[in-house]
Amino acid sequence: MDTATKREFRLIEGEFSPEQAYEILNGLFTNKINYHNRKNFSLQINKGKTDPLIDHRISELKLSQKQIKEIITEAKLTGKTLRVGSKIHIELV
Image (tube, rainbow, N blue to C red; front, top):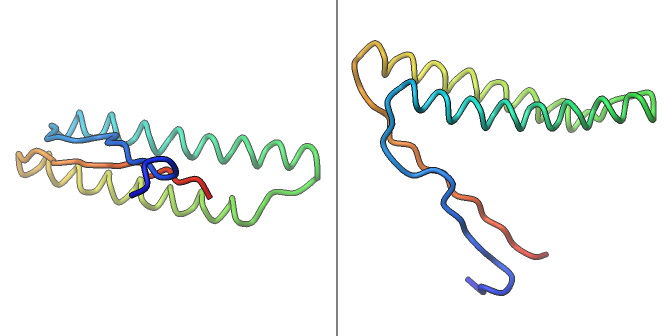
């Protein structure tokens, strides 16, 4: 990886209780969904319509959020913890 144009950052790394995992992951997904909702709201006000690509991305994020909640619920019911890892990749293009 060319460090001048590409970087990688560890965002999440570790083992978490179901409650901790929910707090971290739900917060991330909720913030990202809100970001897209604000963009769409701005488009609706300024141009009278939303962006179908943003609408699709919101749907994807909500589905992922639902699936994560199901995994966390399973962990709670079975008394397990969750190992969560997430990296951010940034590249100049």
